[in-house]
Image (cartoon, rainbow, N blue to C red; front, side, top):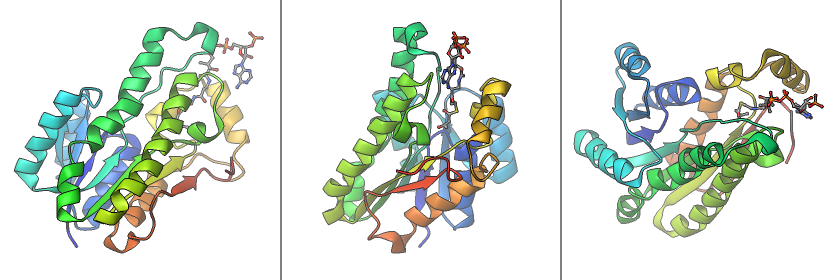
Length: 240
Ligand code: CAA
């Protein structure tokens, strides 16, 4: 069934692939972005997918933004909490600001994205929530105490929501991408990145579409019995 879907961080990287894949499934998609107006305008021009600008770290902005999306496109039945940032540094160099920025976007941002749509999903008796976590939330990563903490926390959100939403027809699942060929991974120093690729049995970075495919599976109407699970898509780099 065609539904309305919200994808945070949906105009670039993995999020853009998810937005396009959900559109290809027949859904009406709203993609949010935080700052890059130019990339968002280009994305809309190329895909016809509407973009909305707000900071997922702000509850008030998220609530107002989501109200506007629902006014424009109808009740949101599918939420993909994808927006995420890195502020990598070894722990001894990590500042409280680097800690807080990542917590605000990657963890509080997930709360802020889901909380405003939750009552409507409960009332309608249907909802599909997917949170994009990370391999590094499962295994930890040198230089990512902040990021790994948020991505592990996201899995806790999903497992709890799965239990709370089940009786109301809502599922909540996570996808844990490994290292995917996006700007975020390309920002890792080349030498470090090459070393990481050496640790991936598949021998390459993943493609954004390979993550999007997990999301379309989890958000389909007939995935109702898959709830509280984590799909790991990392080229065999790490097994839970
Ligand atoms: N394991 C063990 N030691 C390491 C290490 C590692 N992975 N990386 C660096 N070190 C060591 C260095 O060898 C160095 O040791 P010495 O001081 O004895 O020489 C020390 O740590 C400091 O290294 P640097 O001088 O390189 O420190 P830095 O402050 O310049 O940078 C860093 C450190 C920011 C963590 C950098 O190594 C880095 O960016 N690493 C990649 C982190 C990463 O994987 N991020 C993922 C981004 S993509 C993403 O997050 C998406 C996703 O979900 C997968």
